Image (cartoon, rainbow, N blue to C red; front, side, top):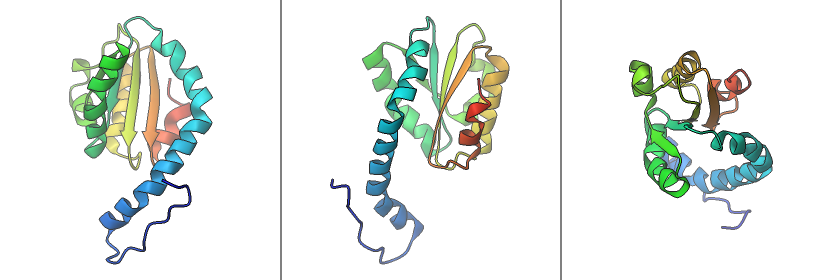
Length: 154
């Protein structure tokens, strides 16, 4: 898709239609951002992925949880790493079913707004229960709590 792609004006003006029409621009912008951050991402992830017994949890609420459900099996089979998808609602209600203090954890949190109370609570619980806990928040909102807390997270 060309970089200068512009969707047709929304005829109905509904939120859902606007979100759908916005997707091509959003994906192009996301790819550009990932390319710009690739070196920093590699510097963060490479040492973590070398850790023995690293557990990687993909988490989110609602449709953000669905992202983890979709990609966790593929990531596990293609990397040999211990990936699992756990919705934030499950993490918050039963943290000790998913958080093992004896193993390092990379919590990858998906959130559109980055302000879901259960997403923020999942991060806080992971920090509370897992001494060696690392975070990779993926959100659409720089002003959201997940993104803003990124520097405060272990």
